Image (cartoon, rainbow, N blue to C red):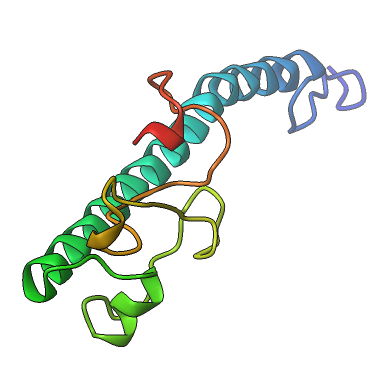
Length: 130
């Protein structure tokens, strides 16, 4: 046999092999991407719950020390109950908190706080009800 008549196969991938690999990668991405976005939302919700608990704890400590709730959240920072006003992780702003006034006006300006984030959580609850 002559060297020119030998079956010369190149070193590389065929189109079918490339299509199979690309379809496997696409399938794996289709499974992984939705889980990634849910985990980001779940983490933001956990931070929101923690920030709400932190602010509410500072409000309770202020009431225990002074006998009245603060007029605003800036008072909590000024009196060092909080180092700084935490951000709402869903709105990415510290100015979207919604202060809730106490039932009796003589108790102060705000006794609770809610998130100003629109929408609902992964469990179906509105963020404003937390």
